[in-house]
Length: 95
Length: 358
Image 1 (tube, each protein chain N blue to C red):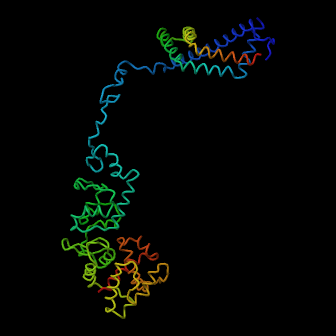
Image 2 (cartoon, rainbow over the protein chains, first blue to last red; image 1 turned 90 degrees about the vertical axis):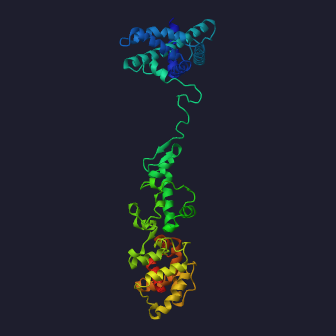
């Protein structure tokens, strides 16, 4: 476990150092907007807001309600591509 | 980076995959969280629901899909045949011609100044005819002035003072509206179709005759304001007029012609008048030949600076000047071009020639 966590820590560090993490973030965001995921998410948020009331909605409310749906709504193609990139990065840098 | 230096195989693979999945889900959560923060801020700042409109507005601006009408529901060429009233000249202009008309009418826009300048230049070149040529005016206009703009003359009475086409209507009015033009007096002068010579003093008559045809029309008793080459009148007529008008008045005596007196003047005048036809006047009478030669050679600077000799000089030089003057109604520009020095003496010099006619 220790090794794993160490490994993980190392990987994360590497990701950040090389700037790959930021690149991946941008890529993901762009892809999600392109495929309409963001609009769907906004619709979800609207529902939550209407449910909770405009004045009293909090960040936590939105996050808690929306995030799981968001995770589920990510299209498969986007997911696969991202995984691909991560794998490539790891194989490149780990071994 | 060497982590345990193990090749990626079975268990590691799964570990790696798990790692990858972890990283992936981290990224996705990041994205979600970012979105949530954005939305929350928008809600609290009040701009979250801005892009939504109510049902009524949506129905109002629905896309229209009918024939003969564009997507907004407007008919295509609805305003094509409408006429608009110009605020400047109060004429009714077709809608599609309205903008170019306004450009010219208001004197703004790229071409308007060009056209106006051209018009004024051509008007100055060809002095206005007298009113007995009223009927031919349209034809003359097309011939003499801007052939490119063949605007039909319509509704003269409707025209405003500042309408650009007003100048044409002034031709046969004896300067009634002349004073209201915002032009300099010289041009205003030209716009008067005819000048009644009775009202002018001898000096004015003389100066007029040096620049203009001057033949008095029988119909209107006015002097022709065209140039010396005006096709309506012959040189004989011009000479006769000058004899008539300038004869009784005192004429400046020329130093050269002093002794000879009258005998000299007539042949001089006739010879000089013949200069009207030709550009160069090399064969003028003896006394003038020398001076005329000097003046024909423009580059020669035999131009004495004293007035006396200037007159004698100019009597011959005037012959040449005439030809230059014919081209335009004695604008100083032209005399400048033909005679580079002393443009001012052009006018009195020419008048002195005509004095010799008597």
